[in-house]
Amino acid sequence: MTIIEAVQGDITHESVDAIVNAANSSLLGGGGVDGAIHRRGGPAILEECRKLRASRYGKGLPTGQAVATTAGDLDARWVIHTVGPVHSTTEDRSHLLASCYRESLRVAGELGARTVAFPAVSTGVYGWPMDDGARIAVETVRAADTAVERVRFVLFDRQAYEVFAARLR
Ligand code: AR6
Image (cartoon, rainbow, N blue to C red):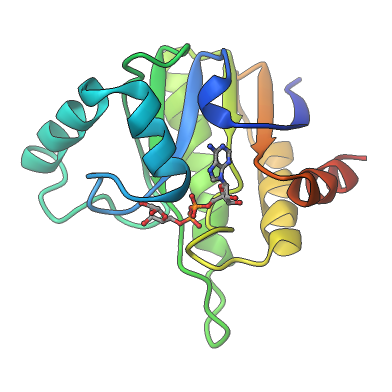
């Protein structure tokens, strides 16, 4: 059984096997948690991302998919990059957000990661409402068939933490 927990903090300070990054399809970095991961993780992460762009993901990593790189200087073995959907009020993209969590756990399982830290994917620049983002995150991880032993949702601010903690109760 997977232990699922929520903590408030900066995900780049986590000591886990894999840290999930809320990336964009270019894989070449950005703001938010993506910027923080690349800043603290150092250039080795971007170097591997560039190689992935040149090989498997010439058109970018599709929304809802996940791919692993080194974690560089972070206290983790891997960063798993996933691309969340931009929130839309005219189209239901929930399946794509659920896919981010499912695919990240699938990649983590393949790597043999036992502990995985997730940010609240899509709830920043991509505009997903926190409560619905937390619902999808928690439901998807709970339903996942995974060998990952511990999933930590790492929420940047108190309010996001409260929303996730309530979903987990
Ligand atoms: N640790 C944990 N959570 C964080 C951190 C951190 N260090 N920094 C921000 N958050 P966002 P998205 C929270 O915008 O919505 C990037 O430019 C933040 O408060 O990072 O999926 C990418 O390159 C929010 O709740 O990701 C893409 O272009 C959550 O992480 C785009 O943003 C996600 O916010 C992706 O947008």
